[in-house]
Image (tube, rainbow, N blue to C red):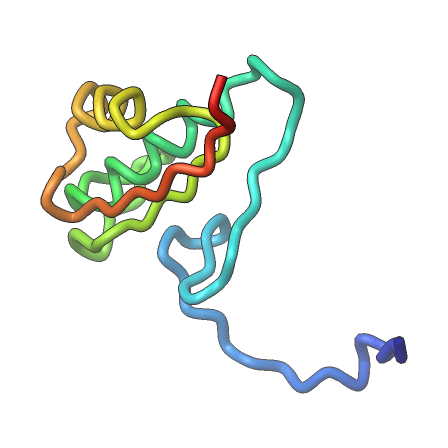
Length: 102
């Protein structure tokens, strides 16, 4: 696989969903040890995005948007309960379970 020097990459303006944190149109992966709060962080961000509420640093949201959640740990009812508690706009959510059957 060939590598490019970063100096050879053409500069492009980044569109942000949350300035400096979440780039629009990009995939963002949240990875870490179990029990450190990844799912709760994602639920909070998804709720803020769907409802148009300000970001954690106080930055204004650009407006409500739809969210797709892919979840490999929690089932859909658990995810729904968390989103409701975080005041998400439930009409703007789509979820796909990938959880292993226990």
